[in-house]
Image 1: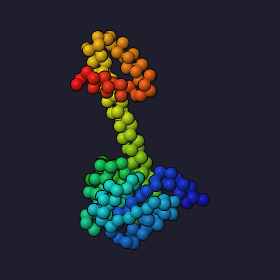
Image 2: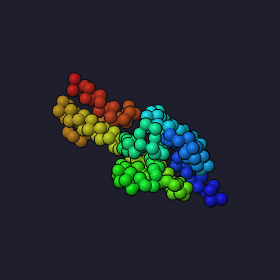
Image 3: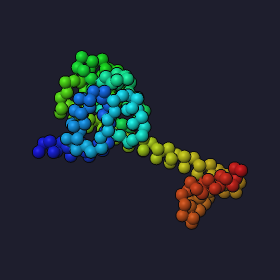
Image 4: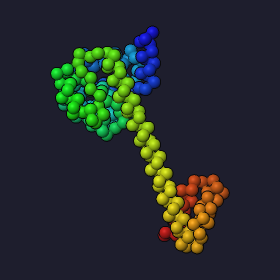
Length: 202
């Protein structure tokens, strides 16, 4: 029953997971572990280069890196993914390297798990990494909305200034004009502002 509850919790956060491991035995271990926790969309690669290409091509929520990889240790890959994408990253290293590697990568947002693996700790680390990645994606979307809103406000402000300058309206009259045109034409204020600017700025 406890195992089923864990599966439900993990699958709600993680839909696509990439496992990077140069060891076939370890790769199978992680894939079996994730599959047992109801993660259906699993992919695996053997090198850092393959992992980078895979992340560019697919929308992974979590990447598990079993260090060392064939072409690099793995901490560079982990940091690249954590800093340049929204994917959650778990880096698995030997116990004697845990402190050294953690000091290098945790500030970038990488979660480090040491071998031999504690299955509950691995599960918890994956959940935390996936949740962090999800939060980053949400923040990025909110930032994009804010940037779009700021762009609209800037263009509407410029359009008001154009109406004041060229049509000798007051600021309030210019504001009402843009609002009325947007309502009558059933288009966003941004489109009205752009039309005004094209008229008077050209």
